[in-house]
Image 1 (cartoon, rainbow, N blue to C red):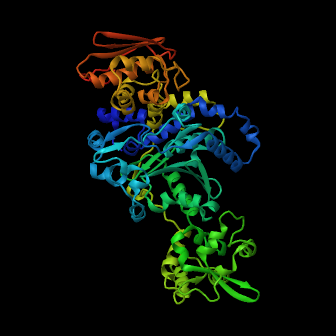
Image 2 (image 1 turned 135 degrees about the horizontal axis):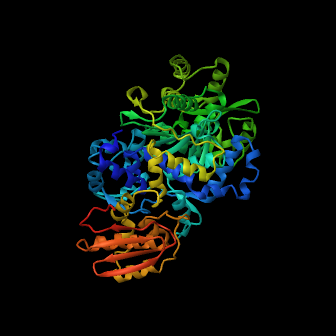
Image 3 (image 1 turned 60 degrees about the vertical axis):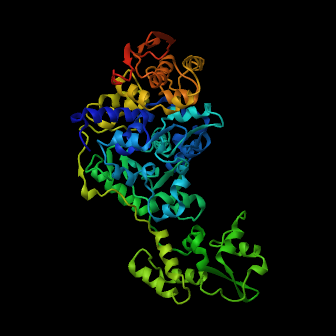
Length: 583
């Protein structure tokens, strides 16, 4: 990845992107993903979870039970939010112009859903833009797809119609990574964050492996159970390439020639992930496959001996009986399920053109076929091709069900370079010790250097990137204030509750967070008004002067003063359009 120290414009853009953390920003600056993990590790919010009765005695629990405790807490306290309007709108032209110096437009379009990516045939078939709601944006208009800190996730409870916190997939992935370390005591070295063009999830190197998928967990057993939830979890790795893998040691990105992730760690991850995504064929797995692939069920039928006579039922009919029923056709409850089937749903003769699943199960038990190999695949195909015109399609689908080959960044094509100073955050460190440790690494580790921009601590970072992000990327505020005149906007913002969504001194919310969640400290309110009035009065001289206890907004000849409890060090932020948005 290009050295930002040799490119001040890129460095400024990257630091400001660490503040706003949109989907496209994380794609172009992949080191931002782990910087958000560090921001969540430094936040007091997740550390407070340890005080919740739900986690009482967690230190005595076995590792997997600790992880499931974290999962249930996240399930109870956070919703998956994919409302694309939450963080406002922008245009393709604006974003392409912004990033043109760093990445060609055609490259971005190949890897990002907002710029034309539709994945492989699966995504064309389901019309991915409609699936994600992107089709409602016509022409050049696209939504911001932003990632939230844990504080912003918690603050969704202040929005109408939200009973809990919320976040999108990257937010949940980074939340999980921090929570697994703090609460479940999973070493950071065993947590790998993966991003595809349309999804983000984590792989935890424990036992056979665990995937976090939005709010849920997926074990290897769950991956192959054929349920709707496992089908949803499988979608990204089955149909998309992994564009980014982020780890405590660094990252590897599909488009950049340099990788900062430890090469041995990436090799371990790749081997463990491939092992997770492959499994030998068993009779039970056959049933899971038929349940999983609705379009393939027409290739199968099940035989049942009823009063000494063989009867046959289409797989899709039998599976319909599983709905709302505790019995399954591919475990030891098959007899009970068959007892539920109405007599008229059975056929007296085998259904033409369908594989009898019982025969396939018996063949697999007796021959231990490894469908992952070319030989095993050919044996199955040969065995059943004569009985089913769809055998080739069915056996191919079965092989894909048992063996997913993840499309990972090509390590052989990368130049691996390590950070001068590794993170080395380990269990036993307090939150305060982690903050001090990360701060000590800022000159030798880009993840640590960017973490405080994601953390939004204005007493630990240059204000310029934060102010730049606030003034240039606050579409929700501009849209929300559109019908108000200047005085009405000032009254509205002034009357908001005087509380920040960020607890600590020095940490500030962006204008759109203040507007969305309806609250803010005086410094945050002044910057919100500066962003709105700047867009309306491009010729005006605008500045925000900050002290530890106050913020003063000046627009031409008018001045507004706000009290503050943030303790931000004295400074002045020029906010006019005629000057760079950098202190």
